[in-house]
Image (cartoon, rainbow, N blue to C red):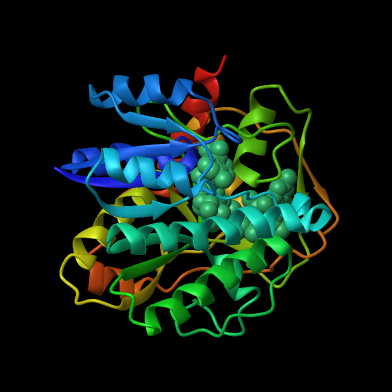
Length: 336
Ligand code: NAD
Ligand code: UD1
C-alpha cells in the first residue's frame, strides 16, 4: 500500500483527506503538532475507517523528525497541509506565519530530496487571486498582491515550488488552490474545530444556530452582486479531500520535474444570504442575523472555473451547498 505522509493531518482538511486516501487504497501517515487540532481526531478516524492510523506528534519544521518518519516508513508521497491559517493573526505576528508556512516547506523539500520522495501535493488557496478582474477564475488568472502575510505565504510557497521544479530535483508537484472549504464528514465524526470566535462564515452560522453566538452579522449587502452580499465558491471538504486522491493518481503518470496548479471549487458562486437560506432550509432553524457594514479587505466576488481539474484530473464535486450546510450543522450538533 502506497504510504503518504500528511503534514497537518489532524486538522480540518487533513483529517478528511486521511479518510479519502485510505478509501482509495493509500495509507496516510499523519504528522501534526496539534497546534490547531486535537488528538481525539485519531480515534474518530479509526471509528470511520476501522483502521488505526500511524501518528507522529511533532513539528514539520523538525527535519530530524521528518527523516525518522521516512526511515520508519517507505513514504512515496507527501501532502503538505501544515500551516497557520488565521488571516487576522498573520497581520499581527507575520514572522510566525512566514517561519511556519514558508520555513516548513523548505525543510520538507530538503528531506524529500535526501530521501528520494518524488510526489508532493501542496495546499494553496484562492486567496492568491485576490479580487479577480474576470470571473470565473481560471488557473491562468494573474495572481494579485496578497492582502495579508498569510496570503503572501501561499504565494511565496507556490513561487518556491516553481523555482525548485525548474532546477530539476526529480520531483512532481501539484498545488491545489482551494476555494472556501465547508461541511464536515457525513458521519459527523470529524469536522472543523475553530478555536475561539470563528472568523469564517459557516462555523459562525452553525454556532449562532446552536446558541453559542447571539447573532451573525452579514458583512455588507450593498455590493454589486445578485442580492448585494459577497459571493464565494463553497466546496464540501470531502470533495476537496477527494481532489488530493486524484492529484496523486495523476502525479503517478507524470515524468520527473513536473509542476501544475489546479483550482478546487464547485464552479458556482453563492452569496452570503444564499448560504444562510440554504442553512435555514436544511436545518429547519431560523438564523438570527443582521446586516452590518462591509468587512475591510473582503473580496467582493470570486468563484472557480473548474474546467482544468474536471478535464485533467477527472475530478468533479459530488456534494451540493445544501449537503454542506446539512453536514456542517450535524457536526455542530454532535459537539453538544
Ligand atoms: P487546520 O488548522 O485545521 O489544519 C492544519 C493542521 O496543521 C493543524 O492540525 C495544525 O495543528 C497543524 N500544524 C500547523 N503547523 C504545524 C507544524 N509546524 N507542524 C506540524 N503540524 C502543524 O487548517 P485546514 O483548514 O485544515 O487547512 C489546511 C491547509 O489548507 C493549510 O495549509 C491552509 O492554509 C490551507 N487552506 C485552508 C483553507 C481553509 O479555509 N480551511 C483555504 C485555503 C487553504
Ligand atoms: C477567508 C480568508 C482567506 C481564505 C478563505 C478560505 C480573510 C480575509 N480571508 O476568506 O484568506 O483563503 O477564508 O478559508 O479572512 N461573512 C459574513 N459574516 C461573518 C463571516 C463572514 O458575512 O461573520 C462573509 C464574508 O464577508 C465573506 C463570506 O462570508 O463574503 C465568507 O467569509 P469567510 O468564511 O471569512 O471566507 P473568505 O472571506 O472567503
